[in-house]
Length: 178
Image 1 (cartoon, helix red, strand yellow):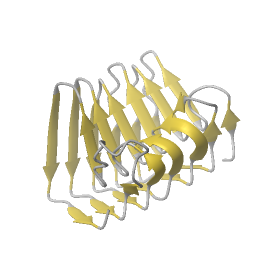
Image 2 (cartoon, rainbow, N blue to C red):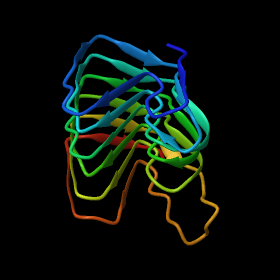
Image 3 (cartoon, rainbow, N blue to C red):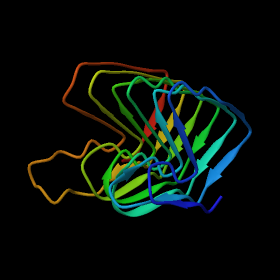
Image 4 (tube, helix red, strand yellow):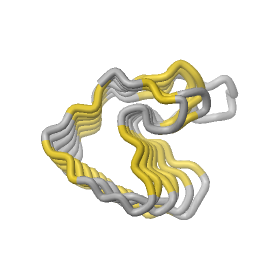
């Protein structure tokens, strides 16, 4: 709680094959430095399993991505019955979750009120690159980026998808607002 990193991962920095199991944990009020990723949890080539966890109030004022969790380079996180409300980025993408070239399973979770003040896309979830994303039996409520600096960019309030080869499954969810 309340950590500030000058690198990626204000709360946790997971790399190179790590696979921690987090049960009923809270990752809150963390931040990371200028142009960094994963204010709450940063994953590179790692596979954390989170159950009944809360990724809440992780934020940063400069360009960043993945307020709650950022995964890249073959990561495979699984979130079950987790809460991801609210995380806030001043500028960036994916205030709740950001997935780049990875696989993520999000089931029975609540992603709510994740905001990107001057953002690109995806208040709740942003997907880019070669990624596989499955969101099932979740509630996505009032997540959104505010309009971008570039009038040509369409925000994609709840889930944003940008350039790449991706496989996304959205099944049995409640999606409101955003």
